[in-house]
Length: 101
Image (tube, rainbow, N blue to C red; front, side, top):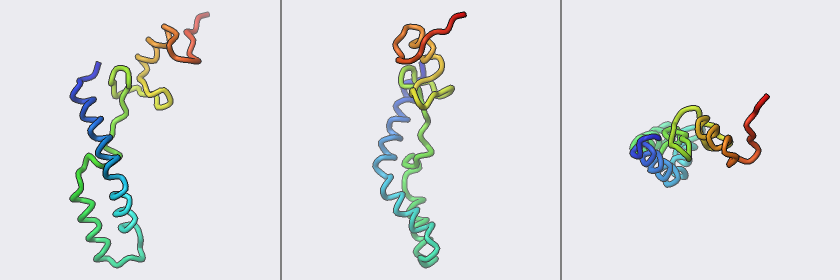
């Protein structure tokens, strides 16, 4: 089980990303547009730098929804390999069957 503080921090980051996504996209569009004057693009860069770092989508860490584990994460199932194996063995994950030969 992961530390509760790490899981909560990640949840806060997800909220911040949702709050700032639109504004960040606007500023990035201004910065990437070569048609806008260099001064305006520079001002947009400064405004983007002033925004909270945790508002960036790259700061979010994929974590298992069952255990909070950050590694060996399956995006499709939103869980780690360990949780997948445990729940799969119990028959709680649809389509997953314990193999035997």
